[in-house]
Amino acid sequence: MSQTTKLALAASLKKLLLQKPLDKITVTDIAEDCGVGRQTFYYHFQDIYDLVEWIFLAEAEAAIGGQKTYDTWQQGFLQIFQMALANKPLIMNAYHSISREQVERYLYQVTYDLLIGVVEEQAVGLPVREEDKRFIADFYKYAFVGILLDWIRRGMKDEPQAIVGRLSILIHGDIARALEKYRTDRR
Image (cartoon, rainbow, N blue to C red):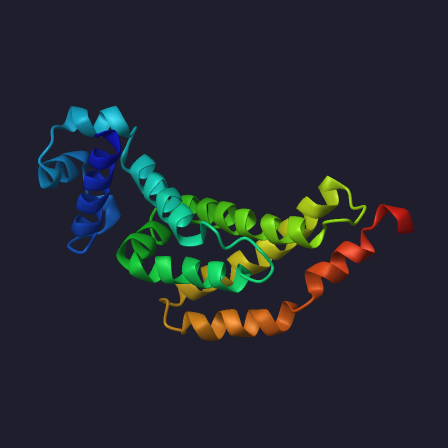
């Protein structure tokens, strides 16, 4: 029942975001729209921003679930774009409000989870330190999130498939080359 209530509260917030900005929505608004009491909201979430973060994380897991390999990273990244488009009012409101940091933190986490899977897969059999693998994943994470944030800032107008296609061309083979450079047996 707990997950059902969280999903209902999330749906209410998304519905309310179509009517007014995030900073004008109260816990009472969400609870009334959802048909529950304020205490029910506070049983599940500390505040509205906690709900926003929960939505981001739940949707991210659904978006990239099994797309963490070299052959599927493009699909995972495209699904992150598509998830953002599907939640455009939430993303735009969060981005342009005080919870912008949450949007960035969410995007960094989701993108890192996707990329570390790709790096780990490409590093199989290579003597590469864990900290170097994390560094490579972080490097690409910051590049990808920068592109995502710029896309959000500009109103999400560019076609996600085109962006991911350009990224794919740009980094084709680069992760494997980076791992080769960090081999511990070459130092």
